[in-house]
Length: 157
Image 1 (cartoon, rainbow, N blue to C red):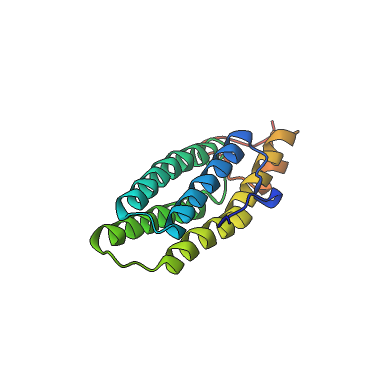
Image 2 (cartoon, rainbow, N blue to C red):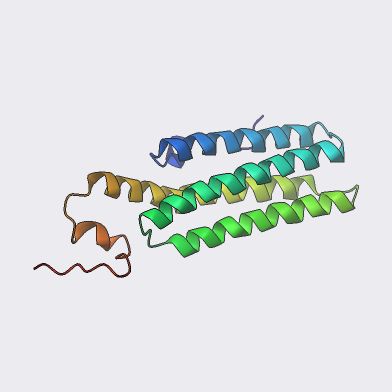
């Protein structure tokens, strides 16, 4: 049984982001399977460390895209990323310092965060990509969704 299942609603339309999302779901499911098998603590910590590294790199990709296109919800999205990274560090630290851990809490934290993040923040990132791809005029339409780049005049002359 899987903890998370890839669903079309998670797709952003950005192939690199979607590929990494699917890989992250696979890693979370691997952790869940090892947790259900009552694998040793070191194995679980290694998987969490790998997930942390993959997520950190993935977030760097997403944030680069958001900065490049002046994404208006960048700070909120970035803050949600930081919260997950902090949560994973907290989960890992808790596993390192105890032999008893709450399996249900671990499952819930990981599955809830990803499902909510994919449906909200990353779904909006999908709309950003659609707007960029369909951008037709330089001075208006896209800026209803994006910040105007600092220092760039949008006056028509």
